[in-house]
Length: 532
Image 1 (cartoon, rainbow, N blue to C red):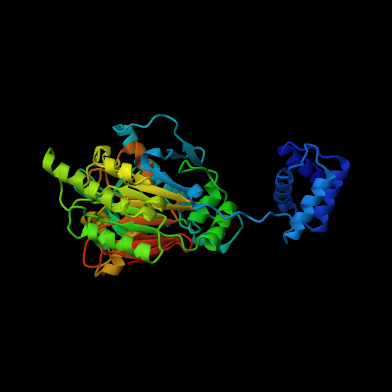
Image 2: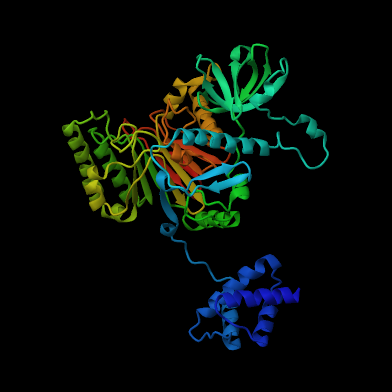
């Protein structure tokens, strides 16, 4: 054991270009023994001691016993064992704004049972093969979650619970097995005859909903993946007995398996580092806030006065947000193609907003402004993910607001251990128009909960077929919600709400324009939002 500790001591100090004589080595061993430092904490404790030693003006490469003793006594005087008092964290060093087109593409590799990074260049046009591959990738990711779920994964120990396990089958296993009951996982879609069917990697089967009393919770739209239990008939259809969303996997569970994978391209962290960040955020920056506004119609007469009122309240109450996210639409009506006058007014409205923000120097210096385009805004493309607002229309904002970010839709904010996803789409209406089955007599509150559950269970922001919602197939991974984000903002024309599901906090700030000028604040320390 002593030899192991000595090697660890030498290794840590060598990392800082220090060498140790026998006397210095003996002193350090004595320090570790006197404080009864456990083996898992030895290396981090030595790191602190070595860093503090090298901060001294008279520190030498060969560790000086006198300097080492002085450093140790100094740490003791501070009431610490071997840890230097932590410096206050700077939120700016841990705040990243991530565009959809910057995210690395990780796809599920079934043969290796893990994620694999795609290094080939991505294109905007895509190919028929890439469209199929993006859907297959969604299925593979959901399938590996399902198979890891306790109801599907058998224990390695003998148990009566094995009899209760459910076994997934594929559509090719149905052939010739009339009258038997099966559980399938696949995508809901219409075939050429206009019949709803379930498609998986091996084929498809027509579904018969007439035998279904009521579906499980959630919204089952065309293009979503579902778990369906049913009986295969001689007419080659599956009479549905039960239908449900695939089980959702918590962020912590996914991170414990794939924590080494840098899905966002900003550096991977361990679960231990995540917990340390969570603790320090609560202790050191509990009052830090983000603001989220949606449907900021700049052509509406109430918008700029409303924003001015918000900024005035921030100054009066010393409540300056770190980030203000403004989601479109930034116009109340669609701009006709080629209408120069409408485009000019659109640009002038952004110029007026730039002047308003610049008139609040404290906010301008301290706050990051993020602009997320909506369905009616002018961008390069109308498919998901959407490019940022055109640079030619936002020049004054760039000039007058130093911390401005023109984001894609969707986009993400990485703040310490937290991943915040922002998506501006009228998602509730779009999914309800294409729903296959939903519980009868569903109230508005249930619809909000069902929408959140469906989006997170599907691990995707747009669980629809590409003819309903076109998606750039090479960038489909940017719409993925796996691992689950810490927070998801579904900015929608629908009523505002907030729901926490499987540990993910989801909210809709509602439309800013209205009698109340509604918006939401988000507190990272509490992972919670409030409507205003």
